[in-house]
Image (tube, rainbow, N blue to C red; front, side, top):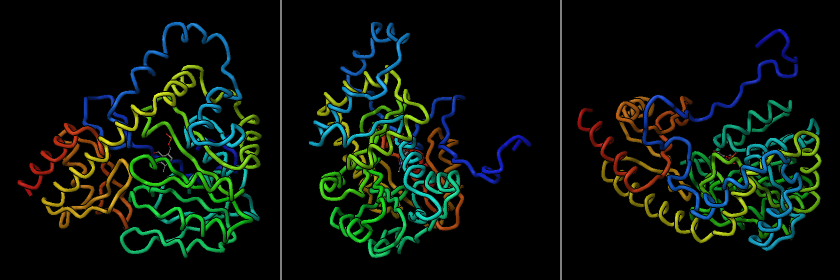
Length: 354
Ligand SMILES: Cc1ncc(COP(=O)(O)O)c(C=O)c1O
């Protein structure tokens, strides 16, 4: 840290994203990207004519995209917020709704950005331990007197809680915002966005990065009451009103018009998830039940870091965290069938030598 860094950020531990190596081609199962390209219509939409308009700013209000998303989720445009990836939205939510008197609570093992945002904004954060098998117990979130952030499915476990459980959490925390991060909801889980009509305190964050094959485009959106969305707009228009670039906006509009393509992709991921888990089971792995596009799994008798390194040597990247509670585990993104076969072959090869 330089001597010029503001004291506000002394000791800030920034987030470490999964690596995006440039040195060789890997089977990349480390950052939960989609193995499928965007829909052909999305690729066609981002054409020379659109590039030719880059001299002009994009629409800061994202009106067309908001209308499309509102239609898709049967809400009104004022219930939709759009920004540069759902990370941006989570950051804004911490900034907009939390302060000294309104601290934040989230599960002890969840998306690594939550504690970073809490620290960035100088907040008291309550870390709520997960139960046996990384299970999130809804009872632990009742009457908390904190704003709450829950990823559902949770990361890196892939476990879900039901919409009814989310309703109970909302109902018992009516004076606090409950953010449900549904980055991975499209791989078999049920979204809670319909509760928005009943609960002014619910903010549901979603992303085009996973199920809509647009991680590189950086597009996230949130669904919530008009009041919460207006607060997020205040923060966005106080930082960077043009956070969605023209090409991403064009791509996202085409993507939402071709939802059927992405539903087929998600179906394939779900099939590949079952295929992979079944084969890892046979190899002696223990896998947490997942409804996300990744699995959290361990091989008894083998340290997670060693397995991660051995896979890397064989050209397969997966994610490992060197933290006591989860150091046995690997988070493996579900990719194409070929990618999963490459992973499984590499695992068999490693186990042969073990
Ligand atoms: C739980 C969760 N939320 C949000 C995000 C951020 O997604 P993005 O900023 O790409 O929309 C991720 C990314 O990995 C995630 O795992």
